[in-house]
Length: 153
Image (tube, rainbow, N blue to C red):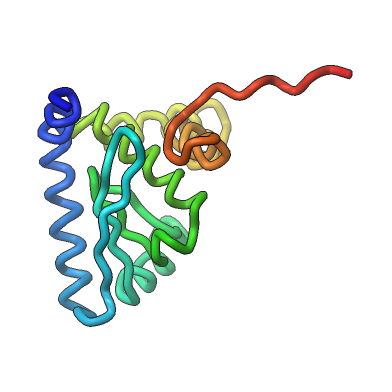
């Protein structure tokens, strides 16, 4: 429990930015913006969704997004109850944010630049996105587990 608290404090500056964005979105459509806590065995986040967020994510300058994780805050276009894979994906980003803290944005950007340098897609080959997609199919939502390699028959 002590380690989790230390990680939350390490990530707190980034989480504060996410909370400010969530509050701004809530001010646009206060009655239709919903907040809830979503967690797995090792971390928790505040999942916020509503029409203002859905519009913002749909019209994001980098292309349509379903959700974005900022520290321990997930800004999403849907309820967490609607999309188990999306929850697992975003919880993986919460774990990454807790590990990297305020350095996460720089590490994420560096991974995207490295992918571009190798001639790959900056999103699909970003190591943090690769891990989050792997979490989508992991047996325990949001936790990375090694999967058995396919058998060669």
